[in-house]
Amino acid sequence: MSNTIRIGVIGGSGVYQIEALTAVEEVTLETPFGSPSDSYIVGTLEGQRVAFLPRHGRGHRVSPGRLNYRANIYGFKMLGVEYLIGVSACGSLNEAMAPGHIVIPDGLFDHTAQRATSFFDDPSVGTGGLVTHVSVADPFCSYLNETCYAAVGQTGNPVHKGGAFITIEGPRFSTKVESRIYRSWGLDIIGMTTTPEAQLAREAEMSYSVMAHVTDYDVWHETDSPVTVEMVIRTLLHNADVAKTAVANAIRLLANAPASPHANAMKDALITNRAAVPPAVVDRLQLIVGKYY
Image (cartoon, rainbow, N blue to C red):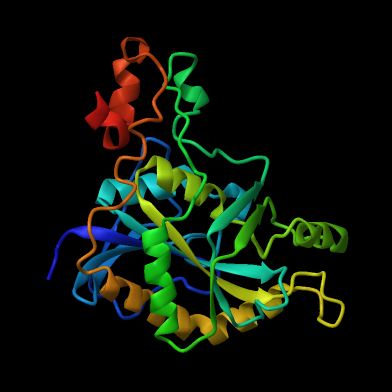
């Protein structure tokens, strides 16, 4: 049994805990970016030590636009996580991706406007910070995507490999006009939290994938009722056991995983002249950039 915490799970709407965890302890962290949504629940599952965080806090207390995404992701980094799995509710913009299905997306469209999307673009460090330009052409880890796809497949639940995921600001649902435009852009599913989790995970040099649970057809579908909270929760509760089984399967499949393919994602992303970077900035982000200085 490994005591190293290489695997993290962020639970979204409807998945606030994983009952199968054993030898559980709560870990409360304070990051350079403030407090995460809740304490991390660290336990053993499938022989692996795993860190779980309820994305919106226990009781679903924090709105998507108010989440401290940087603290959430950095906290996983502090625990040593290399592979991070998000469990998320989403609406479908693609008729083939029906409510009850799970999608492992491979593309991401950021349609948010008010979120901190980088560890390195922080006004608190003034003008003397560290400028970076990380590549997120493929924002989800292909290795972890394959693992998640196989893990969901083992449950027997319908699962789709690949798809374009748009993140909107929320917390409101889309208008019909917006939903139809998103469909015309060739997007497949819609949610409110995958940005900036994916971008921050890449900066933190982690592998990141999402098991996106389709709860509704958004509001574009003329023969389906417009999305409501009641509809979302009903579908999520129905699929909660599938989600938790799929996560357990993924953890088992990751037992002998190599180092994250994105373990050196920031190597070629640092553009600021090293002599111009204040030591305090390097100290603050030591877990990410310390090895490059």
